[in-house]
Length: 119
Image 1 (spheres, helix red, strand yellow):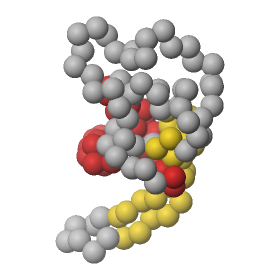
Image 2 (cartoon, rainbow, N blue to C red):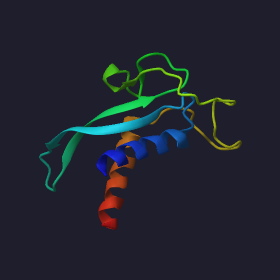
Image 3 (cartoon, rainbow, N blue to C red):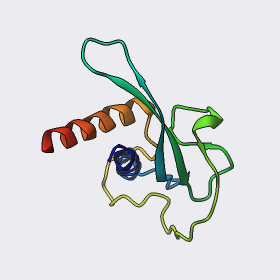
Image 4 (cartoon, rainbow, N blue to C red):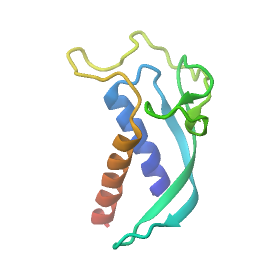
């Protein structure tokens, strides 16, 4: 469930932001879980992710605010055709970028909380 949430959260954010490179996370696998020293149970989770993007250079960052190649995607054409660079509806106030790490963290934590509340 956690791995699926990682992927779904990223892809929904990238679509909402109208990422012109159509970055997509295809798979996420938990690599490491580390307890964090906070008052409530809290953990840092490291994922190994597989993704792709359309028309991007090798080692394109997964997030807009990270240039680290440890968080990069390989360029590949997965068959998606793009007529418009941005697939968002006309009149949408799209930012045309990939998610920022902070945006992703907030959205993923919300996803986890919703799953926890749902049972």
